[in-house]
Image 1 (cartoon, rainbow, N blue to C red):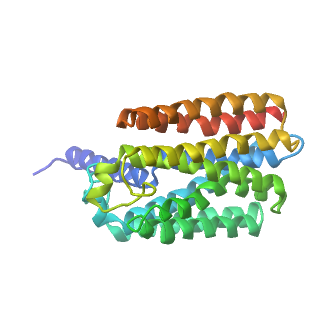
Image 2 (cartoon, rainbow, N blue to C red):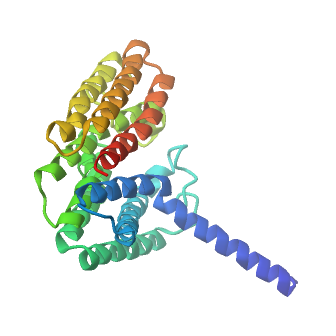
Length: 299
């Protein structure tokens, strides 16, 4: 028989393992990136001094709602996740959590995040966040097996965080909020198609069809990605051209945009998985770099 100390140690290990599984369900790194872009949108929309407490509270609410969407996505795709190497060890396909537990967890996070935004900010913020959750969970998720239309649909909730931040700060959707949404919306395409290129073989195991046109890693696909990158760069300059930010962020956006184009051009010329991987990692750097420059330019 186990001693009391052994039982306590076993219970502690079980608690730590369960806690880790729920954290994995959040896709914490993705949720933090989304929360950061929302917080930067909030800061851009704020005039005068910042209320650090409110910024943190808004960031937490965004992280909770994003985590709820990620958990719902995994609950809906558990059988598909089992087919792929990248996702086979996630909490649900590995059996560490049940689908019911994941959905309960998602519901709790969603309720808490929406309640925070409705009570501490405004109902419009909460409503847009809820629509974003619905689009990601129940439109983007099933469309991934249909075609690249999923990327266009998914780019809407993916682009909404800075707009939601603006609405939280100002209580309304104005032109500046729409410009910030447009930048992040357009960024989704080169970013996600780089991801889809790298993971194409794994995605095919689940019949995910996310690359554009003929859904192959080809020159045509790389050129389509380049076209969206070329559209993104001038849009990233709009905040300065429209007088929302200063010249420093303009030059940051220009240099960062040229870097994005350079990585994309390598993909066009060489078309290797390594090129796509480099572009994917650069895309993770590009968005916060440009958005942070917008905020610093308004200080």
